[in-house]
Image (cartoon, rainbow, N blue to C red; front, side, top):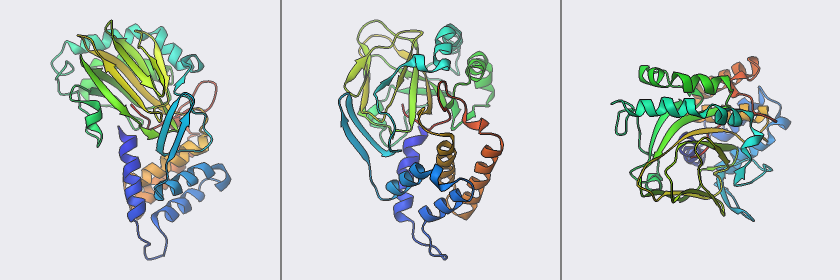
Length: 312
């Protein structure tokens, strides 16, 4: 939800940013602040990504397994439409305990606040909302690394939240997603290749209900996790009489280093609050993350993990 908005905002701000009184553009100031805390040779790909975004460049490639398109990207990352969920210990952990999540979710659906049409569900509000259709709904548990702290979320999903934390799911966003009967999501990209997306299937109707990423199509299976790179063109369809529900998590691509994660978070912090005050706050946030041993960006199985801004 946040990633594509931030990417488009970044491009607009970078392209419109004029040199200020010290003669530096926004990009130059962000780079300067970054180099005060992190070694330049460790964040070369992030700086290159920032400059590419400012220049309106995109990563577009036709792979054997599908078409990839990203306007916020790191070079050199392995590009595959689907990843093996077994490579992520937390994904297999979710599968082992998936009924806890499903049962708690279904119990919530029976209430007025969490039930379909309740106040906790949101429609797509992004510029490409038409791709998602009017029946697409999300119920957010985590956004930009911050867990929802409202009373309703705490009351209805304590077991799910506890499980996600205990498994150290390296997420930046977690939310339930509903796709209504006889609806689909049109082919689109989520524009970033440095985050991945996982779907834990909770309620999947029998029949014609599928997701296509790149050139490959698969079906959700209740209790199983699908991990995908949605910088590839992707689409879904639920041609059944019932709604489909999944738990979606977004997380770093495993080949992004910890320094790069910190640098990317710094860039997006700068874009959240543009100007001198925002950059100073972003630098303080960066220093805190490093001081805390990068605890805020998580642990990924088998490699480096962390938070991401990801895709749907």
